[in-house]
Image (cartoon, rainbow, N blue to C red; front, side):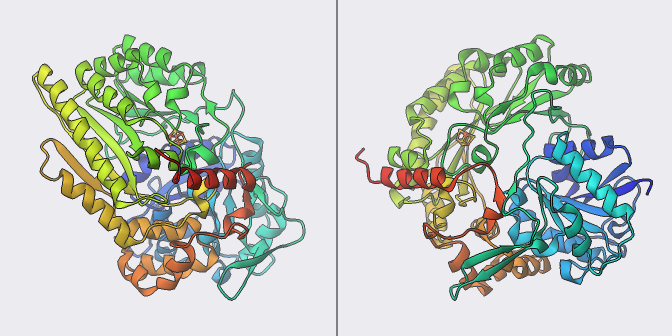
Length: 541
Ligand code: SF4
């Protein structure tokens, strides 16, 4: 076979997909391989008779050898069967034939737990794709199986044979689950030759290419920015943070590895957007930012821990014209901070508000979560009280500058994630979440210069189902797809699914569907951290 044609499918709009650095990185990687050609396909509600088509050649999905979904977020899962159906490809694996493309997926959410989507997929790549031996071997095996005549019935069969020993590859058809009367997993049976758990692939080599944007388009969210992933993982161990845990160990990209991309972007007049879960811990952060500012360039930072905001970095942020600084306390009461394991005192955030505004950054954005384990209404009140205090300082500091900006308060319902200490925790009910959001809104609604935004409680509950569900949730995914992404009717129709997968504290010894993957984290470490968090809720102030 001369060229393997891959549709790199993003289950969300062009604008969202093109703003995703991971998607862009895999696109660049696949096109760098000899004998591979990758084209981009995005989700759209209005598609023609041929279904979704590629950006590059206008080819429909079913004309590709491989459809590879890149999926960073659970809420995009319903678009997977929707895109396949619109393309005339049977969404369920068991209904496909050898004439259909091979359907695979990768990305953060499916790497954490591939099971909810497993009925739709032939293969799942677990971990980080690109420039590793495992990725190369995965692609070489794809080439081999696609070049070979398919003689068996059902695409799952030949994939099974070829991929059993390929690192990082989960073949859903090789794993079968039995359940007890409550619907909990009793046993996982693994076909001979397949690993009990698929070890996640991590790009560890210091010389590995640093993910940077490869395509620029005016419609993308960061249209004029070069995005650079300056680090992966975080050693802080906050109990809710999937990104921190599954990307462990912390890997900082060495500046010399992406300096030329930064230089080129600056020459083209682009802003450099640094993203990573542990920006504050990057040993060269000041050096990188100084370099950009000395070239008269601009940069932006994703949310950064307070210790990263040194006086020098605050000054550089202001000099580069940054209009908003993002701070993520997540919780406000000392008790709640102890429970989640993110114990940065509120006073530190208040000091930063003053320093940032005084330095010339007019707007502050705070991230908070509601519905955290053991949270009460009083903890939500504490969030509002913290914002009131922050506003006083904000107004005072702005007054001396003669201009006042805005405090944005982003409230997100907490969703327990696999491979974190809170994987055992019950997610709060929709009623509780709404109540906590209401408390914060009510207290802050008449406060000038403060804008509260809350994520949808229904979408978060749907995300809760997809984060910790097993393969039995496939029909809910299809129903949401048929409702064009609306979760409300589906959640109403399936209260038992919510009881089983979302609002129940899991038993200590329960077998989790995501334990078919291995991210290098032991149950013992996670469980100990969970217990400590629960104990911390009872500690005296
Ligand atoms: S919340 Fe931030 S500090 Fe905590 S583990 Fe995640 S990335 Fe690290």
